[in-house]
Structure formats: structure tokens, C-alpha cells
Amino acid sequence: MLEKKTYANGQPVYALEDDHLTYFFKDGAIKSEGPFKNDQMEGKWTFYRATGQLWQIGHFKEGKKHGPWLRYDKEGQKEYDEIFEDGKIIKK
Image 1 (cartoon, helix red, strand yellow):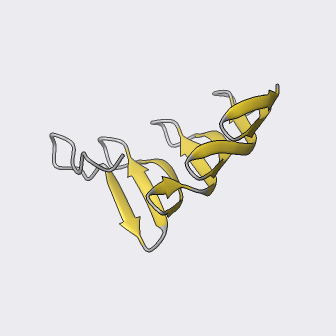
Image 2 (cartoon, one colour):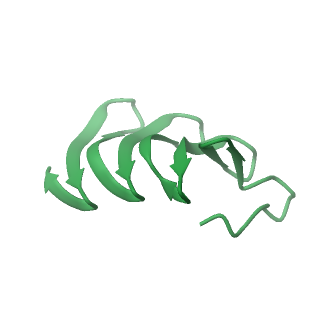
Image 3 (cartoon, helix red, strand yellow):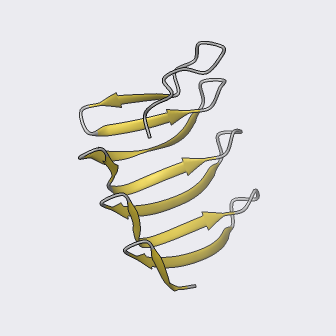
């Protein structure tokens, strides 16, 4: 997951500080961020479009989708709300 360290332009792909991982787009804008424990995504993660606009908020447990996931459209309106359990969708 953390194999690629920089883009061709030299921009870091990610930054890991303590237990918080932040992924970046090639231009340095934040792509996603959240807790990272035991080499896995854990807890609440936030994902952004390349424009910086909020795209998704979701939860992980031991690297698998687990809990509520919200996705927003380009107008900032809720597109859908799903619930996952151990990586499998249980409610659309």
C-alpha cells in the first residue's frame, strides 16, 4: 500500500505521521486521510476530489470497509449512504 513514495514530479504520494496517513494528488492537494494502524486503514477516513471538494467519508476496520459510508456528488449533495460490515455491503 505504501510502496510508491513519490510521483514523477517529486511530489510525495503520502505522509505518515504517528498513526495518521495522508495521501496526496500529484499537485500536492489532499486525496484522502485517516488513521493508519498495524499497516491498515482504520477508523474514519475522508476522501476528496482533485478539486479539493469532499467526495466520501467512510470507516475501516482492519483495512476493510466497516460502518457507514457517505458519498457526495459534485454539487455537495449526498449521493448515497451505505453501511458495510467486514468489507461487505449490508445496506444501500
